[in-house]
Length: 442
Image 1 (spheres, rainbow, N blue to C red):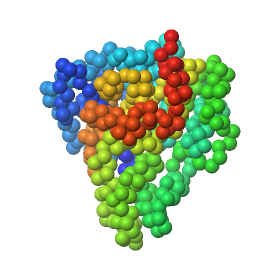
Image 2: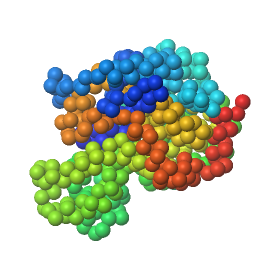
Image 3: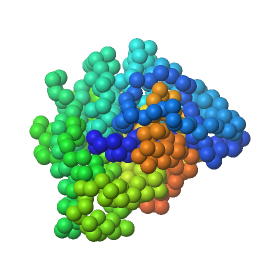
Image 4: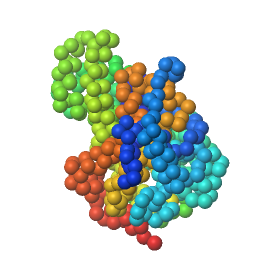
């Protein structure tokens, strides 16, 4: 969404972190410290911080216990992360403790378009990354001034994954990733299953709450011209093995978040609450009152709810990414979002869990992304922006290790196992064996 609130909701997806302790360290309950060494960043976020007076924003101070854990975490980062100057959270999944993955196959990283000349030498010259997978939403792509940076993406063929029909389009040299579509039309489809009148009121509410204008970037849902079935990518693997590709796979966006939140709010009969006063839907006070249950749901659900929505609504994209990684002809693969945290972390966690990594090792790997946004120049502005809009900054800019533990538990409680979740998204036993072979075979 273009409006500030929905952009901030998107921010919550890409700014969480999780921490885990080794036996000799006690994790501070309120911990939300740094991980990677401080560095400059030109990353632009999907949040408007221009009107925030940072002099009035207070960042919580750290306890001695938190500082100790920071030092421990920083040591692990220094040991495992690639020595890149601008690209954050870059590490081989083989670096995870007792990882069965062979080195040089698959990497989790932050936004690659920030790369310096030295970073590119490491990523392309030394490692030889052949396939990039961009997990960001259309809004993030639109707001990224380096999206088409020639020094980084020259020589890469762009591929766009369309969830509708599970198709892939190869962009020509003159084609751009971003397109234009009415989000109101998208929303109508999202609430198409609602009862008569409820749908109209909900759409009207979101128009006023989030704005009804158009924005760039969301894929059109009509038939994609010159697209191929995603399943054919594996079949044509050998033909493509000598070229480099960048795949755009938006596994979570604003529409999915609104749709997911609405699905939870319906349990509380929120639509009925809105209908009680449809004529006041355009008034500021009415909108403020209606925002309350949305914000309560978002703040109360926190990061576990976001991860649950990601697993459900991001399923087609997650499967597509796993298919790419299971293709040895595309190795080395590097997948990323904005900071290489939650969406990237979820993909990494699924892969590691499938291949038999222990939960503690998975959570620890996730923890190495802790509060990467705290290193950025506008961190105080982001805290202020979240607080100003009644979103809990502590919940979304920092997260305890319990978040990833809860996520892994939720997968098992809901789907029976990681394998059960992969069956749910269509990544069957044959596909899983192919992925295991691609990442572990000599």
